[in-house]
Length: 118
Image 1 (cartoon, helix red, strand yellow):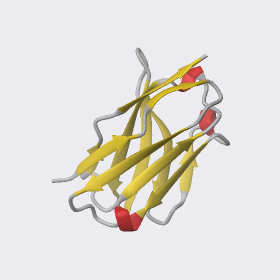
Image 2: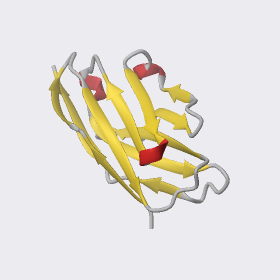
Image 3: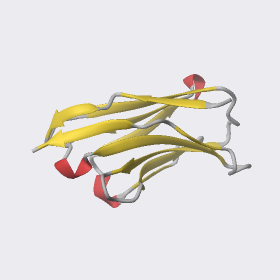
Image 4: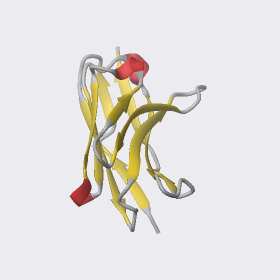
């Protein structure tokens, strides 16, 4: 049974920084894509950033230059460094891991709240 546990959310003023972590337990095939999604009230869940097991990254236009995704494969952990935060970044942030060879193995964390005050 795979579990993803996020941490690092909280309340921060605009312009501040937060670092989210996502620790995976259980067996996940090594070829996978890890990502951070977010969902604000009344809005659809959207991709924020993704990283392959080979460390190729992809970012939403709204966070490029401010957020950095990284991973530690040895520790099964994914990070999201968020700098220059804006009120519009306020959302619940979810960690996701999807196995490339079997996309039905698609795992989600429980979410962590990020609130940016103006």
